Image (tube, rainbow, N blue to C red; front, side, top):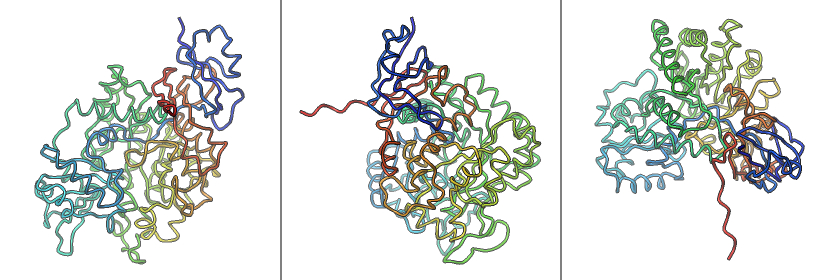
Length: 556
């Protein structure tokens, strides 16, 4: 007996174009036919098929998120999540309410926004008022910094005599005393003291994250950090456990984290261990044939690696290497050695690069690979915020995919209050050059970076097309860098599927795996400013409905 499903009255779209017909017939998990709904319903193989009424909405391939932290996002959603609090007072009120009923040894959470605090750096004193003497560790929304209270600083032994780690910075007052904000590698000074998560907590977190993505129409993704980072532990065992139990049906892969303390001498041992971990994960059904290389930090806290110094009060911060130009986590020799050794073992390279210097260094590392090795896997650079125009054509020339997190490409508070003032006018004009990448012929993919931003692809696509946040009437950020809707949607579907090596999905065509979505509307029929109103109402994974939005009750 076959398992059949028929989607009717939809607008069919795939791989950049609208298709003929209004219906999709799915049989045994794959697309059997596309065309007229009445004609498909009359087929013998559609007998007894479950019918899904698309009600004029867009029917498109499932989204593939090429850069997401599903385990991290799910765990944080089950704990103290302050991402929905707008403003410092609202955030502290939410923390205080949680602390009042929490009986654990630590208060752990995250999601606060740097733009809500002077200079993007909240204080331990303010957090003390909400948490008392219970140590607290709250990661910020971009996950490149943490807010801690006095009890946490005390528990970690951090005081005025504590030096900054090489890969981070402790915010201090005029006397050198820590004020409560820890950037980048300095987070680990406190996160090392957090209580360990139980296996049940880790499974519940990953399951919650996967459910959130499926509800948004994301049927495939790459876990962008598989390793210990920012107070979160390696998710390999949890992924393997859920996959073996049949509790995680999405098409998932992961990028093994490259630690920042690697040296030229330790590269061979590191890569040997990566191979061991990749093979062990593969045996459990978890594909981790990619490595994650975080080249730099983020612009808003001045840790993104720039070619020239940041501006402070309109002046540059200083001159020499490592002085005023952010943080490059690897020397160029180490970066190239890691990239070469990993690629030689068959790993794809997944770089995090925000600043122009970081983007250049990542491209140089790929350029240094032998040509045959360079093209063996699909290498990609995520975030690409500040890109020297001279580097834009190098992506296509080197076969490097642009992995876009488009939600950030707009004038929001963080951009206007923290980022633009330290970049200056010239570099500000180099931000998120998606249109330039398209015109230069680069391959485009998309990811969310959730929980740094929303996991909802339609919100990111809205910004990619309008260069404005959904609902915002602010001036668009560099409107010439906007993408057409068809290009942005293709990047989040076919583009990301191809980047992640997922053959047979990401398109609507006969024989393809039926990982599909039905949207609430046809975004091509409305105004660009309405794209963000689109939502996923049905998600199919291998022909099985894994999410269906509940119908609104009829009016009384």
